[in-house]
Image (cartoon, rainbow, N blue to C red; front, side, top):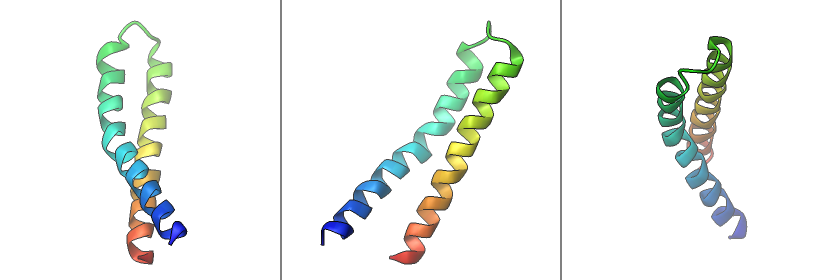
Length: 65
């Protein structure tokens, strides 16, 4: 039972990451206009990878349940 509850907590955290990563991506582009473009691109790719990883984790979790 504890493993089941832990998996659901991880799913909730993963869903939050999935929902907040695109928002952070937009904030990165809007606010950080003074930063070098290469740095903005690296951070944007980081958020994109984080979003994709969380999407895959949610997909795998739904297939295992």
